[in-house]
Length: 348
Image (cartoon, rainbow, N blue to C red):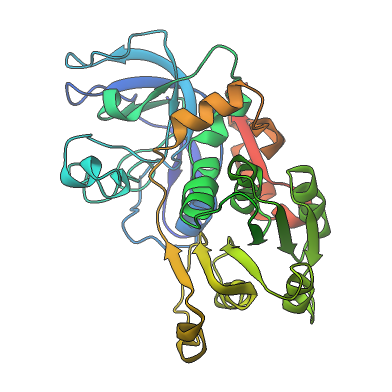
């Protein structure tokens, strides 16, 4: 089969590799019908994730068709259309039982294993461990182009942003960074009745998209960014400030917008230390949350997509075939210049 293989920092190739095969009784093999690229894949290619070694197949999101099942698998059969999420879970360890399978002990202490600790989904087929507790059947009325974004970006925005931020009816919310994950947070804030959702970004295209996705206001980054946001809240600041970029300055910006008693929900993946002004923050009674997605919200989000409540297909702005994988990466890497949010990649 063909797959996108990592060969060290800055090096990848769409090449022939051995077919995916059943290794354990709980495995299934899924033919990949749709996949996408995540910002984490770009971090890997920069050499930022030491656990990813030469020869690893990249990718951790897919929609596909089951072609083979292990002898212990009870919930899936060949021909089932399934969502392969970013998080794999055994369902039995202490962390899975606590509802945080992002730290599943059985699969290595972290639920994100595809394209990281085992071969991933940017391939013609993928082996999925612990299929019964990890895969999801895709409803007939949900398309591949809708379902693919439930593998990672939509649950991340919803769980690590909206739920962890404790968004409640009537709240004012700021989302700093209107990329794919920030837009996912904006798209799902309405599920909890936020009265005002303010998108903050330096890119006009992303701000336009944020308004399409449900933001009530858009603030372009500039010298008066924080003042502009606070001005939209009667001078009080927002109830929930969601950071979806991953830079020290964007987290500090998000923290500057929240009112006393509010919550800062950090979604962004930070690669460098951040110095927070705790001497000013402690007295404001603010909360700071952060984390890796658990994808436990997928059943809820699938229902919302099927009902038309969440137009997940809006996330996909560019489409490619497997043999255009390099072009897909180039477009996604330069997302702002290409007016790209997420890419959709199919066999043909």
